[in-house]
Amino acid sequence: MKSCDYGDCSEKGENISRLSPEGFLVATGNKAYSFREAYKRFHYCDSHHELLMKNVWNRVRQNEDKDDDHVAPTAI
Image (cartoon, rainbow, N blue to C red):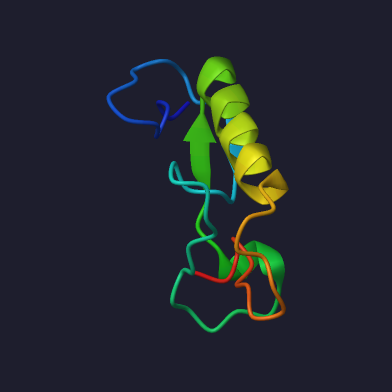
């Protein structure tokens, strides 16, 4: 099993996510026909996966600077 992709963590990466440690989707660069093929996979230990989800949720919930031109967190 791969190790956790979050920082210098050496725990087992039991959770697989399409979100990078910064909380964004990262394109594979390959011609993709599905969401699964379009984005890289990352592995996280339980504690870092929970931290990542909290950080993403907090960023999405913030209502400052959100107008019609606001870019979604997954657009980068």
